[in-house]
Image (cartoon, rainbow, N blue to C red):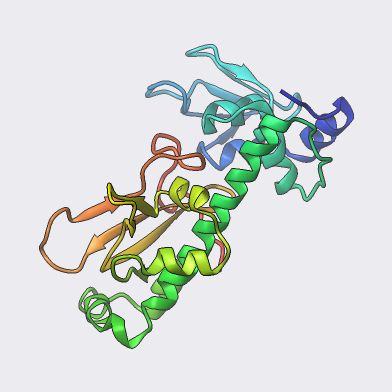
Length: 251
């Protein structure tokens, strides 16, 4: 796997304080020179997870796991080292040089496209909610007493019929491969492309970087299944992501 230079890695590490990063996942309290909290990597009742702002490392006295800010992110997010560097560089507004690795680049390019598909879909669903055709959904959100501020903050939307999203994605120039990889569209045995979510209230799911990675769709009546969620894919892992762990960026 291609990697960044030691100079770049050091710059990214030094610009991201480990206490700030760990605090996004673990509730920390200061005790002496260090911070302590419940370890996110094993079950415990008494805090044995220590973070040292002086040494910029973490260590759990319970399970023995430890390391620097990169180690923590790779373990907590289930990502590789390069992805951790990229995540922290973005947080610190550090421009990284391009990596020269064809396989990695192809995967990263597909991931970037899927993020774009999701971003467009979230905006499309949200705008749909305010259209005359979404009267049923509008009545539903009124019944649930969801304010317009809530709809905007959570980017709540409404999915249409059959293949409406698929057609809009094609108009935007997206290719079938990245559309299918997003999990927003399925292809049936007859070769037809059909939207996964139809006539549902839509909830985008974001990662800690504010990128839309998945969706949840709820029916407006008592039909089943009540909820449909995105399948795991190149940008979404159900075990690693929680709904509203971070606000979706406004799109």
